[in-house]
Image (tube, rainbow over all chains, first blue to last red; front, top):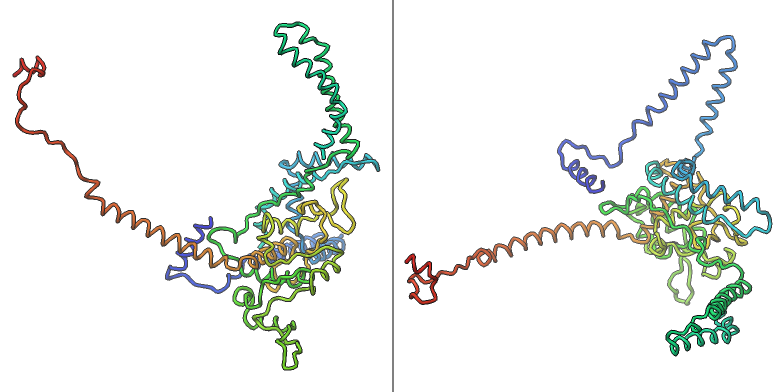
Length: 141
Length: 332
């Protein structure tokens, strides 16, 4: 991948019709995304208008949704979500099963317990990170 | 210790064991076909003595030390997952936007405890900051001057040739401020740890919400699976949105960790970009020269390699002798 990237970069730079930009061009999806949101909002509004008798309730709901969207500006770590998915995937099911079993055993054992679930935890974390690593690098900048 | 305790316990059984074995050996050598030599009673005594020695040594060890808990996975620490770092590819450079973000993370988060003592401001110029930014940054800190006429050492604002300031005056002050734990210098940390970038990224992002069931975490320590021993004095420092990136990148924990790790890799080997470019040049030039040398060698050796050695027998027929075969003689 790296090698052919370099080759295509060289060819792009050498072609006379190529335009050279100092910075990466702005992403067009960023512009399209708000438009789709607005269309969703308009559709929601039209639906609200259609259901005239119970008009107030859907409007309130729509407002709540908007508030939630604003709250979603809080950053979510992609690593945690991806690893959570991986942990619950079929791939890591054995490791998760072992860890859950160990955790139940250890917490049930009470005070005179000498066992720990570090090894099972290691296997689970190893599986989850291994599965999430390429996906994570696709999402991170 | 185990060996010593084993030896100690064998001494008590020595007389019985040696007696049994020696007797069996001697009788076997003297009486070649004696039925009494392999009497089951004596063999049983030997086996029982050996078993008693083994069981006794194990019991003695358990009495002294309890369950052995050596070489656990926790001692080793979880090996870091391999991440597909772009800058580690052969033909890739550092992403200097990422370096700039990573330097921001270092300055706002790490620098309160960790020094970066081998990096001068001038190294940042052109790779991470512009000259003016680096100068402004240097001038924020004070450095010692040369002794003046009275031998006094005064303070002056920093210059580009100064090194990034240490957060603590010395190691003792650093230990005192951090509950006895010394925050390592980060200049070469990527080279100084097994797993390099992967390890540091995993360490920064790998703090679980709560340690696994039954795990013991020492006082003042935090559980991190990637740290050998799993008890690390550094608490989790990177939280989502901790830093406001100037380029608007969402500052999630993993994004900050990735950026700061790439920055630390730059700090450890700032020559990487040049090194890779030089390596490419070397490979290209040497491959051309090698191909040329192969061609020249074949060209110069062509006359020797393409010659043909032919045995040209004398034209005149050899004188007929008795040795000639009868058929040939009949033909001629």
